[in-house]
Image (cartoon, rainbow over the protein chains, first blue to last red):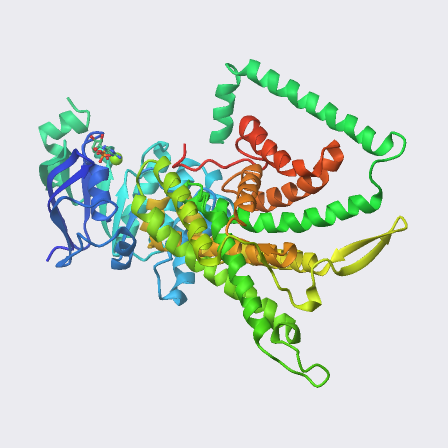
Length: 237
Length: 370
Ligand SMILES: Nc1ncnc2c1ncn2[C@@H]1O[C@H](COP(=O)(O)OP(=O)(O)O)[C@@H](O)[C@H]1O
Ligand SMILES: [Mg+2]
């Protein structure tokens, strides 16, 4: 049984259709990437999985359980965490308060100290800036905070929406290293990226989304070598 | 950051407007200084120190009541970006609840040896006052909860004007419900004798005696207590963090596992409890309750919230205090009739809306508003 199964979802904004039958699967322990041009529907797909949007049609199935109707604020209790596009850190809360809210859903409060240490070992910068308001952090630091906050919920599945957006290349490398590290520690990852080359280089498998439909799906290796993908998304002529 | 860039961008084309604004500001400041000379330095002052002390006392009392109500506007605005125009009526419900508690306790006999006609209200004033506040705050909190559930929640996601109209409708409904239930007459708030209105500690000043009323001190002390408790709640507790998170970004808050609607409900409960307490204070200190008793304090507190920067909690406290003091000292200072104190308060609202809509402490723009 796949960890996450998205079956033929159709999602709308009012009357505007954004997804037209998207299906995908994520197996336990994988890094799966969803690539596609701006406006293809990547964010919409993640927001539908996390319950922020309701599909008009189709199901989201987590380990055999239908979670399509589960409200967004209950999704994290199913141990799915999302790092939203644009990070979504709480600018007027401190770094420490943001991390604390990451653990809002936890009932095993006694393990929090250990998890906080784990976050600080992944992102030492956050430890230095604990008392600072999140709004005063740089873009890279905010991305670290958003990821750290998601880790604080102790997820089994992590949804990442364009974590490299707007970051300097050094930071992109760092973030991708950490994604791999989190994955090695047992967290399954669904990674949305416009930076297709980076995403395919760390993913096991990938899906190519175009105009709200899945165009291609294959192993990351084959997608990297696919002529169409190279032309359209990797900038290789 | 965002705000400054917005300002920087808009400063150029608006420089003429800014010039006029600065000019008017300077004129106004000059007028205030001229008044200072008139009032204090020019021959015989129109008011002695005793009068000013009296104004200051009633200003601080009034201000602490406004502060409690203003926080309700600001909390709700911070989360839903709407003005809860029925908030003053929630305060009215609190005031009536306190009134009925005192009425009931006054009818319970509690005879003692030297006074067989003693009643509970006077035999146990502390319990009575506590009970009035607990019942007043609870009734108002429950009303706030249902107000949101019935009048605002179904309109979530509608254009911003829509819940505003619903708020005005809810306000009219509550006022008329109270009119039907309690009649149109003004009810006299029966305080325990220990805190009879008008009595207090005497402060001799200038050969005169100024009364520091017991009810005023009670009001100020309780307000401070409640404001500190609120501050701790918002800044130090998990609920407070969740409230601030929801105010800033609802979908990110939901992703943390925060039930956004639950937090909104709790915000209305807290706002209601504060307004209800303010209503009981109003009754105890000023003595009259009737179906429209929340109207003027409601608008005043709204003014206070705008003055402090709507959405900003310390701003609401400061704005309330400031407005209370302006209202009592302002007319004397400006040489106006005291009947014009409301005009003064609302002129401030208009001036703030025109010249500094972000209020004294300024508003931090959230992502959703930008
Ligand atoms: N809030 C919205 N309201 C209306 N249309 C939207 C909204 N958000 C996204 N869309 C539309 O949905 C489509 C998919 O958008 P999105 O999922 O954000 O794409 P991606 O993340 O791949 O860039 C786009 O055509 C976009 O214009
Ligand atoms: Mg996107």
